[in-house]
Amino acid sequence: MQVDKTIEKLIAKSLRGKISTEEQNQLNDWYRESAQEVEEISDYKLRKKEEVKNAIFWEVEKKITPHAQLFPRTRNQSIPFQWAVAAGLLVIISMSWLFRFQLGHSAESTDRTGQYEVFSNPAGTKRKIKLPDGSSIHLNHNSEVQVAADYSSNRLVKLSGEAFFEVSPNKELPFRVLTESLETRVLGTSFLVNARPGSPESVAVKTGLVKVQLSNEIGETLEPLQQVRLEAGELNRTELIDAESVFGWTEGKLVFRNSTLPQVLKALEDWYGVTIKSNVDKYPNCRLTATYHNLNLEDLLLAVNYSIPISYTINQKNIILRIQGC
Image (cartoon, rainbow, N blue to C red; front, side):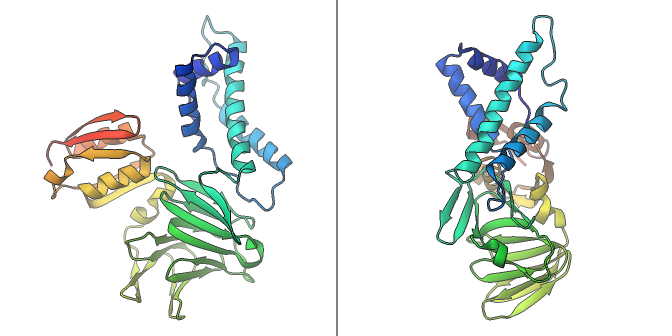
């Protein structure tokens, strides 16, 4: 988590009780955005409160200690001031962890429904969910996963949207993912399931073997770098030619392959959680092929401008973008 000098000053003012209402609102906005970057503690069945406190301590220490130049010393800035800012960060990050743990990892995104614990990501949000057996789920934006309350006895999850799974081996108890039409079974592997509304359900395998079947027991066994799509009620297996375009988002990569501009802008809205208004309808034949890695929105738009001339205005979560040709 990087903190600019403006936020440092606001934290210091808040600690001293000399912050204005406008400045406090700015600090609150920063906190809400930054809280999403904290990796969620979600092996909810096994961790005790004391373990959570320890996790908070070590996570915060990792964020503060290695970066000796995070708060560079100046002639007019004393060491106590730096520690005050660090203390402010510690409080904010710790509150984020405790809030997410005690209230079910965020009141907006997690809920208990019947026999499942539900994790939902809105646009602009991606997160990693750790399961009790050591398996993990990378949940993409606009997606929801339900984890069985008795997960340790059945390793069952339900998915709507898109997620990448890293499954701990257990020959006695297969890991199962249920979507609207498919059931995916594995013993220990990594794979991606896409069950977004309006698109064919698909499964792509990165490592290991995966069995995918319809409710009527017709199935396919996939090897690494193979995928299967559900089309017209049948499973169609193909080789995965461009793995980066499928798995890239799990590594912070936004990947476009001959994508139309409406597809590009929709992907940006989902990735960054923004609303974009543009004149895209005037350029139906423009396409983009590129990979962007861990860029903030403005840096990405600057990079896009090298391929497609654009101008834009950013007002918080609202973007006005004008395409100037292609």
